[in-house]
Length: 631
Image (cartoon, rainbow, N blue to C red; front, side):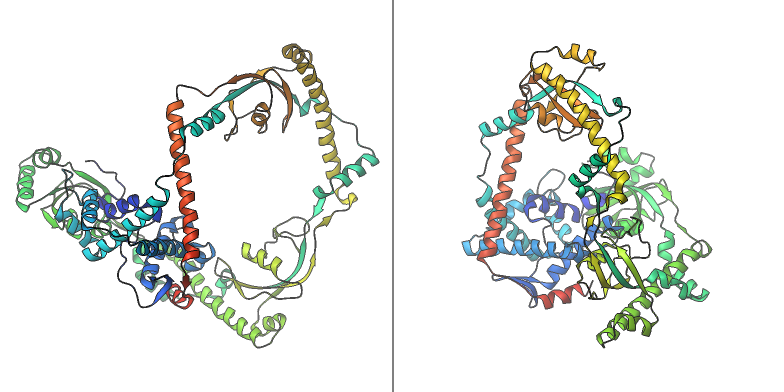
Protein backbone atom coordinates (compact mmCIF):
# COMPACT_ATOMS: atom_id res chain seq x y z
CA UNK A 1 0.00 0.00 0.00
CA UNK A 2 1.40 3.39 -0.96
CA UNK A 3 2.39 5.74 1.81
CA UNK A 4 2.52 9.53 2.10
CA UNK A 5 6.04 10.90 1.96
CA UNK A 6 5.74 12.73 5.24
CA UNK A 7 6.83 10.68 8.25
CA UNK A 8 6.24 7.31 6.50
CA UNK A 9 8.30 5.24 8.93
CA UNK A 10 5.74 5.78 11.63
CA UNK A 11 3.63 3.27 9.72
CA UNK A 12 5.82 0.55 11.16
CA UNK A 13 6.36 1.72 14.70
CA UNK A 14 4.95 4.38 16.97
CA UNK A 15 2.66 6.27 14.58
CA UNK A 16 -0.10 3.71 14.42
CA UNK A 17 0.18 2.98 18.11
CA UNK A 18 -0.32 6.62 19.06
CA UNK A 19 -2.66 7.70 16.27
CA UNK A 20 -5.09 4.85 16.60
CA UNK A 21 -5.33 5.09 20.36
CA UNK A 22 -5.97 8.81 19.99
CA UNK A 23 -8.63 8.15 17.35
CA UNK A 24 -10.29 5.51 19.51
CA UNK A 25 -10.38 7.70 22.61
CA UNK A 26 -10.33 11.19 21.15
CA UNK A 27 -12.38 12.68 23.97
CA UNK A 28 -9.27 12.54 26.14
CA UNK A 29 -6.95 14.47 23.83
CA UNK A 30 -3.51 12.84 23.56
CA UNK A 31 -3.70 9.45 25.23
CA UNK A 32 -1.00 8.85 27.81
CA UNK A 33 -0.03 5.27 27.02
CA UNK A 34 3.12 5.57 29.09
CA UNK A 35 1.32 5.78 32.40
CA UNK A 36 2.98 3.51 34.88
CA UNK A 37 2.57 2.84 38.59
CA UNK A 38 1.50 5.64 40.94
CA UNK A 39 4.42 7.89 41.82
CA UNK A 40 5.31 8.64 45.42
CA UNK A 41 5.55 12.34 44.65
CA UNK A 42 2.55 13.57 42.68
CA UNK A 43 1.74 16.97 41.21
CA UNK A 44 -1.97 16.38 41.75
CA UNK A 45 -4.27 14.06 43.66
CA UNK A 46 -7.79 13.41 42.34
CA UNK A 47 -9.65 11.31 44.85
CA UNK A 48 -7.46 8.23 45.12
CA UNK A 49 -5.81 8.76 41.73
CA UNK A 50 -2.36 10.35 41.66
CA UNK A 51 -0.84 12.28 38.77
CA UNK A 52 2.89 11.70 39.04
CA UNK A 53 5.66 14.14 38.25
CA UNK A 54 6.95 12.01 35.40
CA UNK A 55 3.49 11.66 33.87
CA UNK A 56 2.89 15.42 34.01
CA UNK A 57 6.38 16.20 32.67
CA UNK A 58 5.95 13.78 29.78
CA UNK A 59 2.57 15.23 28.77
CA UNK A 60 3.84 18.80 29.06
CA UNK A 61 6.87 18.05 26.88
CA UNK A 62 4.61 16.50 24.25
CA UNK A 63 2.39 19.58 24.26
CA UNK A 64 5.35 21.97 24.04
CA UNK A 65 6.73 20.00 21.11
CA UNK A 66 3.34 20.08 19.37
CA UNK A 67 2.95 23.84 19.78
CA UNK A 68 6.59 24.82 19.15
CA UNK A 69 6.20 25.33 15.35
CA UNK A 70 3.63 28.05 16.06
CA UNK A 71 6.24 29.93 18.12
CA UNK A 72 9.13 29.89 15.69
CA UNK A 73 10.33 26.41 16.66
CA UNK A 74 10.64 26.98 20.40
CA UNK A 75 8.15 27.44 23.21
CA UNK A 76 9.83 27.92 26.58
CA UNK A 77 8.21 27.23 29.93
CA UNK A 78 7.63 30.93 30.71
CA UNK A 79 5.72 31.38 27.47
CA UNK A 80 3.85 28.13 28.11
CA UNK A 81 2.71 29.42 31.49
CA UNK A 82 1.78 32.83 30.09
CA UNK A 83 -0.34 31.28 27.33
CA UNK A 84 -2.02 28.82 29.70
CA UNK A 85 -0.42 25.70 28.21
CA UNK A 86 0.71 24.37 31.61
CA UNK A 87 -2.80 24.81 32.99
CA UNK A 88 -4.34 23.10 29.96
CA UNK A 89 -2.12 20.05 30.44
CA UNK A 90 -3.01 19.94 34.14
CA UNK A 91 -6.74 20.28 33.34
CA UNK A 92 -6.56 17.46 30.81
CA UNK A 93 -4.81 15.10 33.22
CA UNK A 94 -7.09 15.91 36.14
CA UNK A 95 -10.13 15.34 33.91
CA UNK A 96 -8.78 11.92 32.94
CA UNK A 97 -8.20 11.18 36.61
CA UNK A 98 -11.75 12.25 37.53
CA UNK A 99 -13.22 9.77 35.08
CA UNK A 100 -10.80 7.08 36.23
CA UNK A 101 -11.84 7.61 39.85
CA UNK A 102 -15.53 7.59 38.92
CA UNK A 103 -15.12 4.41 36.86
CA UNK A 104 -13.44 2.79 39.85
CA UNK A 105 -16.27 3.86 42.18
CA UNK A 106 -18.80 2.39 39.75
CA UNK A 107 -16.90 -0.89 39.82
CA UNK A 108 -16.36 -0.89 36.07
CA UNK A 109 -13.99 -3.58 34.90
CA UNK A 110 -12.30 -4.37 31.64
CA UNK A 111 -12.16 -8.07 30.81
CA UNK A 112 -9.36 -9.88 29.07
CA UNK A 113 -11.72 -10.47 26.15
CA UNK A 114 -12.34 -6.70 25.82
CA UNK A 115 -8.61 -5.99 25.84
CA UNK A 116 -7.93 -8.78 23.37
CA UNK A 117 -10.68 -7.55 21.03
CA UNK A 118 -9.45 -3.95 21.19
CA UNK A 119 -5.81 -4.87 20.54
CA UNK A 120 -6.74 -7.15 17.65
CA UNK A 121 -8.75 -4.33 16.03
CA UNK A 122 -5.80 -1.90 15.91
CA UNK A 123 -4.18 -1.86 12.44
CA UNK A 124 -0.80 -1.19 14.07
CA UNK A 125 -0.82 -4.78 15.26
CA UNK A 126 -2.18 -6.40 12.10
CA UNK A 127 -0.41 -8.08 9.21
CA UNK A 128 -1.01 -7.29 5.57
CA UNK A 129 -3.98 -9.64 5.53
CA UNK A 130 -5.66 -7.63 8.32
CA UNK A 131 -5.13 -10.29 11.01
CA UNK A 132 -3.56 -9.76 14.42
CA UNK A 133 0.21 -10.30 14.28
CA UNK A 134 1.86 -11.05 17.60
CA UNK A 135 5.27 -10.26 16.14
CA UNK A 136 4.10 -6.82 14.99
CA UNK A 137 2.49 -6.21 18.39
CA UNK A 138 5.63 -7.03 20.36
CA UNK A 139 7.87 -5.16 17.92
CA UNK A 140 5.76 -2.00 18.09
CA UNK A 141 5.77 -2.03 21.91
CA UNK A 142 9.51 -2.69 21.99
CA UNK A 143 10.27 0.16 19.60
CA UNK A 144 8.06 2.46 21.64
CA UNK A 145 9.86 1.62 24.88
CA UNK A 146 6.73 0.09 26.43
CA UNK A 147 6.25 -2.99 28.50
CA UNK A 148 3.16 -5.02 27.73
CA UNK A 149 1.95 -4.49 31.30
CA UNK A 150 2.17 -0.69 31.02
CA UNK A 151 0.40 -0.71 27.66
CA UNK A 152 -2.44 -2.94 28.87
CA UNK A 153 -2.87 -0.81 31.99
CA UNK A 154 -3.21 2.36 29.92
CA UNK A 155 -5.51 0.71 27.39
CA UNK A 156 -7.70 -0.62 30.18
CA UNK A 157 -8.01 2.87 31.67
CA UNK A 158 -9.00 4.35 28.32
CA UNK A 159 -11.69 1.70 27.84
CA UNK A 160 -13.07 2.36 31.33
CA UNK A 161 -13.22 6.09 30.73
CA UNK A 162 -14.91 5.60 27.38
CA UNK A 163 -17.52 3.41 29.08
CA UNK A 164 -18.39 6.30 31.39
CA UNK A 165 -18.54 8.77 28.51
CA UNK A 166 -20.76 6.47 26.46
CA UNK A 167 -23.12 6.04 29.41
CA UNK A 168 -23.44 9.82 29.77
CA UNK A 169 -23.67 10.89 26.15
CA UNK A 170 -24.24 7.79 24.04
CA UNK A 171 -28.02 8.06 23.98
CA UNK A 172 -28.11 11.78 23.15
CA UNK A 173 -29.56 12.45 19.72
CA UNK A 174 -31.22 15.13 17.63
CA UNK A 175 -34.80 14.35 16.49
CA UNK A 176 -35.08 14.37 12.71
CA UNK A 177 -38.13 16.64 12.84
CA UNK A 178 -36.13 19.30 14.67
CA UNK A 179 -33.15 18.94 12.32
CA UNK A 180 -35.51 19.20 9.34
CA UNK A 181 -37.06 22.38 10.73
CA UNK A 182 -33.64 23.91 11.29
CA UNK A 183 -32.53 22.91 7.80
CA UNK A 184 -35.53 24.47 6.09
CA UNK A 185 -35.15 27.60 8.20
CA UNK A 186 -31.45 28.06 7.46
CA UNK A 187 -31.39 26.90 3.83
CA UNK A 188 -34.19 29.12 2.57
CA UNK A 189 -32.84 31.84 0.26
CA UNK A 190 -34.07 35.27 -0.75
CA UNK A 191 -33.19 37.58 -3.66
CA UNK A 192 -33.76 41.28 -4.11
CA UNK A 193 -33.88 43.98 -6.77
CA UNK A 194 -31.69 46.88 -5.67
CA UNK A 195 -30.49 50.35 -6.51
CA UNK A 196 -27.90 52.38 -4.62
CA UNK A 197 -27.86 56.10 -3.97
CA UNK A 198 -24.10 56.49 -3.89
CA UNK A 199 -22.17 58.83 -1.65
CA UNK A 200 -20.43 60.44 -4.63
CA UNK A 201 -23.78 61.38 -6.18
CA UNK A 202 -23.77 64.39 -3.83
CA UNK A 203 -20.71 66.23 -5.04
CA UNK A 204 -20.54 69.10 -2.55
CA UNK A 205 -22.32 70.22 0.58
CA UNK A 206 -22.48 73.66 2.08
CA UNK A 207 -20.18 74.16 5.05
CA UNK A 208 -21.94 73.74 8.40
CA UNK A 209 -22.53 76.86 10.47
CA UNK A 210 -21.18 77.20 13.99
CA UNK A 211 -24.43 76.02 15.55
CA UNK A 212 -24.43 72.82 13.48
CA UNK A 213 -20.78 72.17 14.33
CA UNK A 214 -21.40 72.66 18.05
CA UNK A 215 -24.52 70.48 17.99
CA UNK A 216 -22.72 67.62 16.18
CA UNK A 217 -19.78 67.89 18.57
CA UNK A 218 -22.03 67.71 21.64
CA UNK A 219 -24.03 64.76 20.29
CA UNK A 220 -20.92 62.78 19.27
CA UNK A 221 -18.41 63.86 21.89
CA UNK A 222 -17.53 60.21 22.49
CA UNK A 223 -16.02 60.10 18.99
CA UNK A 224 -13.52 62.80 19.87
CA UNK A 225 -11.99 61.53 23.11
CA UNK A 226 -8.35 61.87 24.02
CA UNK A 227 -7.13 58.53 25.41
CA UNK A 228 -6.21 57.97 29.02
CA UNK A 229 -2.57 58.85 29.62
CA UNK A 230 -0.04 57.98 32.28
CA UNK A 231 3.20 59.68 33.17
CA UNK A 232 5.87 57.06 33.75
CA UNK A 233 9.41 56.53 34.95
CA UNK A 234 10.80 53.43 33.27
CA UNK A 235 13.99 51.51 33.99
CA UNK A 236 14.84 48.94 31.32
CA UNK A 237 17.44 46.20 31.13
CA UNK A 238 17.57 44.94 27.55
CA UNK A 239 20.00 42.28 26.27
CA UNK A 240 19.95 43.84 22.80
CA UNK A 241 21.08 47.17 24.28
CA UNK A 242 23.99 45.45 26.04
CA UNK A 243 25.41 43.56 23.04
CA UNK A 244 27.78 46.38 22.05
CA UNK A 245 29.43 46.06 25.45
CA UNK A 246 30.16 42.36 24.90
CA UNK A 247 33.34 41.32 23.07
CA UNK A 248 33.84 37.82 21.69
CA UNK A 249 37.37 36.63 20.84
CA UNK A 250 38.20 34.91 17.56
CA UNK A 251 39.27 31.85 19.53
CA UNK A 252 35.86 31.66 21.24
CA UNK A 253 34.10 32.04 17.90
CA UNK A 254 36.10 29.16 16.43
CA UNK A 255 35.32 26.96 19.44
CA UNK A 256 31.62 27.75 19.24
CA UNK A 257 31.59 27.07 15.51
CA UNK A 258 33.01 23.61 16.12
CA UNK A 259 30.55 22.96 18.94
CA UNK A 260 27.63 24.06 16.76
CA UNK A 261 28.84 22.45 13.55
CA UNK A 262 25.61 20.45 13.27
CA UNK A 263 23.65 23.68 13.03
CA UNK A 264 25.73 24.72 10.04
CA UNK A 265 25.59 21.32 8.37
CA UNK A 266 23.10 19.96 5.87
CA UNK A 267 23.09 16.16 6.21
CA UNK A 268 23.19 13.82 3.27
CA UNK A 269 19.67 12.81 2.29
CA UNK A 270 18.58 9.82 0.29
CA UNK A 271 15.38 9.02 -1.54
CA UNK A 272 14.60 5.59 -0.15
CA UNK A 273 11.94 3.00 -0.87
CA UNK A 274 11.80 -0.22 1.10
CA UNK A 275 9.96 -3.50 1.28
CA UNK A 276 9.56 -5.89 4.19
CA UNK A 277 9.90 -9.68 4.11
CA UNK A 278 9.10 -12.05 6.97
CA UNK A 279 12.32 -14.13 6.57
CA UNK A 280 15.94 -13.49 5.65
CA UNK A 281 15.85 -16.11 2.89
CA UNK A 282 12.93 -14.45 1.14
CA UNK A 283 14.76 -11.11 1.25
CA UNK A 284 17.96 -12.70 -0.13
CA UNK A 285 16.05 -14.42 -2.93
CA UNK A 286 14.46 -11.11 -3.90
CA UNK A 287 17.85 -9.34 -3.85
CA UNK A 288 19.34 -12.02 -6.09
CA UNK A 289 16.59 -11.48 -8.66
CA UNK A 290 17.28 -7.71 -8.61
CA UNK A 291 21.00 -8.27 -9.17
CA UNK A 292 20.13 -10.51 -12.11
CA UNK A 293 18.62 -7.46 -13.78
CA UNK A 294 14.99 -7.31 -12.73
CA UNK A 295 13.61 -4.02 -11.46
CA UNK A 296 12.99 -3.47 -7.77
CA UNK A 297 9.27 -2.92 -8.36
CA UNK A 298 8.90 -6.04 -10.50
CA UNK A 299 10.67 -8.25 -7.96
CA UNK A 300 8.59 -6.86 -5.11
CA UNK A 301 5.43 -7.51 -7.11
CA UNK A 302 6.46 -11.14 -7.63
CA UNK A 303 7.79 -11.91 -4.16
CA UNK A 304 5.88 -9.78 -1.67
CA UNK A 305 2.24 -9.46 -0.69
CA UNK A 306 2.82 -5.75 -0.24
CA UNK A 307 4.15 -2.89 -2.35
CA UNK A 308 7.30 -0.78 -1.95
CA UNK A 309 6.91 1.94 0.67
CA UNK A 310 8.39 5.28 -0.41
CA UNK A 311 10.13 6.91 2.53
CA UNK A 312 11.03 9.98 0.47
CA UNK A 313 14.13 12.10 0.95
CA UNK A 314 15.38 11.28 4.42
CA UNK A 315 18.57 11.74 6.43
CA UNK A 316 20.39 8.94 8.18
CA UNK A 317 19.53 10.41 11.60
CA UNK A 318 15.82 10.62 10.76
CA UNK A 319 15.78 7.03 9.58
CA UNK A 320 17.92 5.75 12.45
CA UNK A 321 15.62 7.37 15.01
CA UNK A 322 12.99 4.78 14.08
CA UNK A 323 14.80 1.83 12.47
CA UNK A 324 18.59 1.92 12.98
CA UNK A 325 19.20 -1.27 11.01
CA UNK A 326 17.34 0.05 7.98
CA UNK A 327 19.36 3.28 8.17
CA UNK A 328 22.60 1.29 8.11
CA UNK A 329 21.48 -0.63 5.04
CA UNK A 330 20.05 2.32 3.11
CA UNK A 331 23.11 4.49 3.66
CA UNK A 332 25.51 1.70 2.77
CA UNK A 333 23.92 1.15 -0.65
CA UNK A 334 25.05 3.01 -3.76
CA UNK A 335 22.84 5.46 -5.61
CA UNK A 336 20.50 3.46 -7.83
CA UNK A 337 21.24 0.28 -5.88
CA UNK A 338 19.52 -1.91 -3.33
CA UNK A 339 20.82 -2.66 0.16
CA UNK A 340 21.70 -6.02 1.61
CA UNK A 341 18.87 -7.53 3.67
CA UNK A 342 18.76 -5.91 7.12
CA UNK A 343 16.78 -7.07 10.10
CA UNK A 344 14.59 -4.97 12.38
CA UNK A 345 11.98 -6.01 14.94
CA UNK A 346 9.45 -5.87 12.09
CA UNK A 347 11.20 -8.30 9.76
CA UNK A 348 13.80 -8.24 6.96
CA UNK A 349 14.10 -5.12 4.81
CA UNK A 350 15.45 -4.33 1.35
CA UNK A 351 16.04 -0.61 0.74
CA UNK A 352 16.28 0.91 -2.74
CA UNK A 353 18.20 4.22 -3.06
CA UNK A 354 17.02 6.19 -6.11
CA UNK A 355 18.69 9.52 -5.32
CA UNK A 356 21.51 10.81 -3.11
CA UNK A 357 21.69 14.46 -2.12
CA UNK A 358 25.16 15.17 -0.74
CA UNK A 359 25.51 16.92 2.59
CA UNK A 360 27.34 20.20 3.06
CA UNK A 361 28.87 22.36 5.79
CA UNK A 362 28.78 26.17 5.78
CA UNK A 363 32.37 27.44 6.17
CA UNK A 364 33.34 29.45 9.23
CA UNK A 365 33.84 32.63 7.20
CA UNK A 366 30.22 32.58 5.97
CA UNK A 367 28.64 32.24 9.41
CA UNK A 368 31.06 34.10 11.67
CA UNK A 369 29.05 37.35 11.70
CA UNK A 370 25.80 35.60 12.64
CA UNK A 371 27.65 33.47 15.17
CA UNK A 372 29.23 36.56 16.76
CA UNK A 373 25.81 38.25 17.02
CA UNK A 374 24.32 35.12 18.58
CA UNK A 375 27.09 34.83 21.15
CA UNK A 376 26.97 38.52 21.96
CA UNK A 377 23.22 38.33 22.56
CA UNK A 378 23.66 35.20 24.71
CA UNK A 379 26.34 36.83 26.83
CA UNK A 380 24.34 40.06 26.99
CA UNK A 381 21.36 38.05 28.25
CA UNK A 382 23.53 36.68 31.07
CA UNK A 383 24.60 40.25 31.88
CA UNK A 384 20.96 41.37 31.86
CA UNK A 385 20.03 38.63 34.32
CA UNK A 386 22.89 39.65 36.63
CA UNK A 387 21.82 43.32 36.48
CA UNK A 388 18.18 42.38 37.09
CA UNK A 389 19.14 40.36 40.18
CA UNK A 390 21.31 43.22 41.41
CA UNK A 391 18.46 45.70 40.86
CA UNK A 392 16.02 43.46 42.71
CA UNK A 393 18.43 43.14 45.65
CA UNK A 394 19.18 46.86 45.72
CA UNK A 395 15.52 47.86 45.79
CA UNK A 396 14.77 45.17 48.37
CA UNK A 397 17.46 46.84 50.48
CA UNK A 398 15.38 50.02 50.64
CA UNK A 399 16.67 52.15 47.77
CA UNK A 400 14.19 53.98 45.57
CA UNK A 401 14.02 53.24 41.88
CA UNK A 402 15.99 56.40 41.12
CA UNK A 403 18.65 55.55 43.72
CA UNK A 404 18.95 51.95 42.50
CA UNK A 405 19.37 53.13 38.91
CA UNK A 406 22.15 55.49 39.98
CA UNK A 407 23.89 52.81 42.06
CA UNK A 408 23.95 50.32 39.18
CA UNK A 409 24.62 52.85 36.43
CA UNK A 410 21.29 52.20 34.74
CA UNK A 411 19.24 54.78 32.86
CA UNK A 412 15.89 55.89 34.29
CA UNK A 413 13.74 57.41 31.55
CA UNK A 414 10.68 59.62 31.97
CA UNK A 415 7.73 59.50 29.57
CA UNK A 416 5.23 62.27 30.35
CA UNK A 417 2.25 60.97 28.32
CA UNK A 418 1.78 57.31 27.37
CA UNK A 419 -1.56 55.83 26.24
CA UNK A 420 -2.71 52.22 26.30
CA UNK A 421 -1.28 51.63 22.84
CA UNK A 422 2.19 52.82 23.84
CA UNK A 423 1.72 56.05 21.88
CA UNK A 424 2.40 59.66 22.86
CA UNK A 425 -0.07 62.58 22.77
CA UNK A 426 0.42 62.85 18.99
CA UNK A 427 -0.61 59.24 18.47
CA UNK A 428 2.91 58.17 17.52
CA UNK A 429 4.53 55.01 18.79
CA UNK A 430 7.09 55.61 21.56
CA UNK A 431 9.93 53.45 20.28
CA UNK A 432 11.94 53.73 23.50
CA UNK A 433 9.34 51.75 25.46
CA UNK A 434 9.50 47.95 25.67
CA UNK A 435 7.64 46.51 22.68
CA UNK A 436 5.77 44.06 24.86
CA UNK A 437 2.09 44.04 25.80
CA UNK A 438 3.10 43.02 29.32
CA UNK A 439 4.69 46.44 29.79
CA UNK A 440 1.55 48.43 28.90
CA UNK A 441 -0.63 46.14 31.01
CA UNK A 442 1.73 46.61 33.94
CA UNK A 443 1.93 50.38 33.45
CA UNK A 444 -1.87 50.73 33.51
CA UNK A 445 -2.49 48.29 36.37
CA UNK A 446 0.07 49.75 38.78
CA UNK A 447 -1.36 52.34 41.18
CA UNK A 448 -0.36 55.98 40.84
CA UNK A 449 2.71 56.71 42.97
CA UNK A 450 3.72 53.03 43.04
CA UNK A 451 6.42 51.00 41.34
CA UNK A 452 5.82 47.69 39.63
CA UNK A 453 7.72 44.54 40.44
CA UNK A 454 10.74 43.71 38.32
CA UNK A 455 9.08 42.13 35.28
CA UNK A 456 10.55 40.05 32.46
CA UNK A 457 9.57 40.61 28.82
CA UNK A 458 9.05 37.91 26.20
CA UNK A 459 12.41 38.89 24.61
CA UNK A 460 14.32 38.23 27.83
CA UNK A 461 14.61 41.85 28.98
CA UNK A 462 13.46 43.35 32.28
CA UNK A 463 11.73 46.52 33.38
CA UNK A 464 10.41 48.37 36.41
CA UNK A 465 7.78 51.04 35.79
CA UNK A 466 6.85 53.80 38.23
CA UNK A 467 3.50 55.55 37.69
CA UNK A 468 3.85 59.28 38.40
CA UNK A 469 0.36 60.44 37.41
CA UNK A 470 -2.73 59.40 35.51
CA UNK A 471 -5.08 61.35 33.26
CA UNK A 472 -8.43 59.72 32.35
CA UNK A 473 -9.85 59.73 28.86
CA UNK A 474 -11.55 63.06 28.15
CA UNK A 475 -13.22 64.90 25.31
CA UNK A 476 -10.84 66.98 23.23
CA UNK A 477 -11.70 70.68 22.98
CA UNK A 478 -13.79 71.57 19.94
CA UNK A 479 -11.09 73.83 18.53
CA UNK A 480 -8.64 70.93 18.62
CA UNK A 481 -10.89 68.54 16.68
CA UNK A 482 -12.83 71.04 14.55
CA UNK A 483 -11.72 69.50 11.24
CA UNK A 484 -12.72 66.02 12.41
CA UNK A 485 -16.10 67.32 13.59
CA UNK A 486 -16.77 68.99 10.24
CA UNK A 487 -15.80 65.78 8.41
CA UNK A 488 -18.16 63.79 10.63
CA UNK A 489 -21.02 66.25 10.14
CA UNK A 490 -20.48 66.22 6.37
CA UNK A 491 -20.62 62.41 6.20
CA UNK A 492 -23.73 62.31 8.38
CA UNK A 493 -25.43 65.05 6.33
CA UNK A 494 -24.66 63.22 3.10
CA UNK A 495 -26.17 60.02 4.51
CA UNK A 496 -29.24 61.95 5.69
CA UNK A 497 -29.88 63.43 2.27
CA UNK A 498 -29.37 60.09 0.51
CA UNK A 499 -31.63 58.34 3.04
CA UNK A 500 -34.40 60.86 2.37
CA UNK A 501 -34.23 60.10 -1.36
CA UNK A 502 -34.05 56.36 -0.72
CA UNK A 503 -36.97 56.45 1.74
CA UNK A 504 -39.11 58.35 -0.74
CA UNK A 505 -38.47 55.61 -3.31
CA UNK A 506 -39.23 52.88 -0.73
CA UNK A 507 -42.55 54.54 0.14
CA UNK A 508 -43.46 54.69 -3.54
CA UNK A 509 -42.58 51.02 -4.10
CA UNK A 510 -44.55 49.86 -1.06
CA UNK A 511 -47.59 51.78 -2.36
CA UNK A 512 -47.40 49.78 -5.60
CA UNK A 513 -45.00 51.88 -7.65
CA UNK A 514 -42.97 50.38 -10.51
CA UNK A 515 -39.43 49.90 -9.14
CA UNK A 516 -37.83 49.82 -12.60
CA UNK A 517 -39.53 53.05 -13.63
CA UNK A 518 -38.62 54.77 -10.37
CA UNK A 519 -34.99 53.69 -10.76
CA UNK A 520 -34.86 54.96 -14.36
CA UNK A 521 -36.40 58.26 -13.32
CA UNK A 522 -33.71 58.66 -10.63
CA UNK A 523 -30.95 57.76 -13.09
CA UNK A 524 -30.04 54.58 -11.19
CA UNK A 525 -29.28 51.06 -12.44
CA UNK A 526 -31.52 48.28 -11.21
CA UNK A 527 -29.64 45.08 -10.28
CA UNK A 528 -30.59 41.73 -8.80
CA UNK A 529 -28.75 40.12 -5.90
CA UNK A 530 -27.78 36.44 -5.84
CA UNK A 531 -29.81 34.13 -3.64
CA UNK A 532 -28.88 34.97 -0.04
CA UNK A 533 -29.27 32.74 2.99
CA UNK A 534 -30.53 33.92 6.33
CA UNK A 535 -27.10 33.44 7.89
CA UNK A 536 -24.79 34.80 5.21
CA UNK A 537 -21.45 34.09 6.92
CA UNK A 538 -19.38 34.77 3.79
CA UNK A 539 -19.44 38.46 2.77
CA UNK A 540 -20.50 38.91 -0.86
CA UNK A 541 -18.94 41.76 -2.88
CA UNK A 542 -21.45 44.56 -3.40
CA UNK A 543 -23.85 43.18 -0.77
CA UNK A 544 -24.16 45.19 2.49
CA UNK A 545 -23.67 42.98 5.54
CA UNK A 546 -27.11 43.93 6.90
CA UNK A 547 -28.99 43.13 3.68
CA UNK A 548 -29.71 39.39 4.34
CA UNK A 549 -31.19 40.20 7.75
CA UNK A 550 -33.33 42.95 6.23
CA UNK A 551 -34.62 40.69 3.43
CA UNK A 552 -35.77 38.04 5.90
CA UNK A 553 -37.84 40.69 7.68
CA UNK A 554 -39.69 41.80 4.51
CA UNK A 555 -42.79 40.53 2.78
CA UNK A 556 -42.33 39.55 -0.86
CA UNK A 557 -42.60 42.61 -3.09
CA UNK A 558 -41.91 45.06 -0.26
CA UNK A 559 -38.83 47.30 0.01
CA UNK A 560 -36.62 48.93 2.63
CA UNK A 561 -33.33 50.81 2.84
CA UNK A 562 -29.92 49.50 3.94
CA UNK A 563 -26.99 51.78 4.65
CA UNK A 564 -23.57 50.77 3.41
CA UNK A 565 -20.11 52.26 2.98
CA UNK A 566 -20.94 52.98 -0.67
CA UNK A 567 -24.11 54.88 0.13
CA UNK A 568 -27.75 53.95 0.79
CA UNK A 569 -29.33 50.95 -0.94
CA UNK A 570 -33.01 50.41 -1.71
CA UNK A 571 -33.82 46.69 -1.77
CA UNK A 572 -37.14 45.10 -2.78
CA UNK A 573 -37.64 41.44 -1.92
CA UNK A 574 -38.17 39.83 -5.32
CA UNK A 575 -38.08 36.08 -4.69
CA UNK A 576 -38.30 33.59 -1.83
CA UNK A 577 -36.87 30.12 -2.54
CA UNK A 578 -37.54 27.25 -0.18
CA UNK A 579 -34.73 24.97 0.96
CA UNK A 580 -33.77 22.64 -1.91
CA UNK A 581 -35.39 19.21 -1.68
CA UNK A 582 -32.70 17.45 -3.74
CA UNK A 583 -30.11 17.78 -1.00
CA UNK A 584 -32.49 17.77 1.96
CA UNK A 585 -31.91 14.19 3.14
CA UNK A 586 -28.11 14.44 3.24
CA UNK A 587 -28.19 17.92 4.75
CA UNK A 588 -30.66 16.90 7.46
CA UNK A 589 -28.64 13.79 8.34
CA UNK A 590 -25.44 15.86 8.57
CA UNK A 591 -27.23 18.43 10.73
CA UNK A 592 -28.58 15.66 12.96
CA UNK A 593 -25.08 14.25 13.44
CA UNK A 594 -23.44 17.62 14.10
CA UNK A 595 -26.08 18.73 16.57
CA UNK A 596 -26.04 15.36 18.33
CA UNK A 597 -22.27 15.62 18.70
CA UNK A 598 -22.64 19.08 20.19
CA UNK A 599 -25.28 17.85 22.62
CA UNK A 600 -23.05 14.94 23.60
CA UNK A 601 -20.13 17.31 24.10
CA UNK A 602 -22.25 19.57 26.30
CA UNK A 603 -23.37 16.58 28.39
CA UNK A 604 -19.78 15.44 28.90
CA UNK A 605 -18.75 18.97 29.87
CA UNK A 606 -21.58 19.24 32.39
CA UNK A 607 -20.80 15.82 33.82
CA UNK A 608 -17.12 16.75 34.14
CA UNK A 609 -18.18 19.83 36.13
CA UNK A 610 -20.22 17.56 38.39
CA UNK A 611 -17.24 15.24 38.93
CA UNK A 612 -15.11 18.26 39.84
CA UNK A 613 -17.53 19.09 42.64
CA UNK A 614 -17.82 15.44 43.71
CA UNK A 615 -14.14 14.56 44.06
CA UNK A 616 -11.43 16.65 45.62
CA UNK A 617 -8.73 17.84 43.24
CA UNK A 618 -5.59 18.85 45.10
CA UNK A 619 -2.63 20.42 43.29
CA UNK A 620 0.79 20.03 44.95
CA UNK A 621 2.36 23.32 43.90
CA UNK A 622 5.75 22.47 45.37
CA UNK A 623 6.06 19.31 43.30
CA UNK A 624 4.64 21.14 40.29
CA UNK A 625 7.30 23.83 40.64
CA UNK A 626 9.93 21.10 40.83
CA UNK A 627 8.77 19.72 37.50
CA UNK A 628 8.60 23.14 35.85
CA UNK A 629 12.09 24.04 37.03
CA UNK A 630 13.45 21.15 34.93
CA UNK A 631 12.30 22.76 31.67
